Image (cartoon, rainbow, N blue to C red; front, side, top):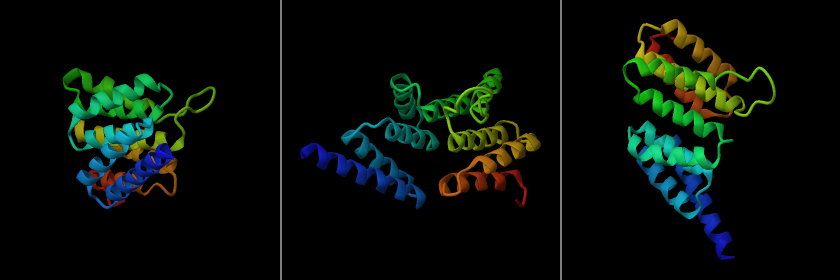
Length: 177
């Protein structure tokens, strides 16, 4: 019964963290995620925590979380996307292009076999690729637009967080889309 209560409390914290994220309360969301992960270190929750820390520029905290999830759960495509994003964002000089290419690779469905990432994760990879393309190559607007169109085509209709992220990148392109 104690394990059940702990799991239920962790689930409440996780759901509250996602609500806070949608409300734009990033710091609160991160702290609620930390609490949920401390109670129940599910890979998805650790990954979300790592990604949110990364989005807040707290890469030193994010990297060990994401690396741990990738090592323990290599099937977690989302963790690999998050790590690729973190590495591409922090790359400099000649390392930017290969790091960005790794991230872009997750946006494409495999030519053979099943899709280990799924549509939603591929949409997120396309959106993150568009964001970083625009940040690192401000004149690469056509490439950014193509990635955003791919993200929109792949995005699940009920993923409001991703839809908002896609819209923000569209705004940065200067297009009234």
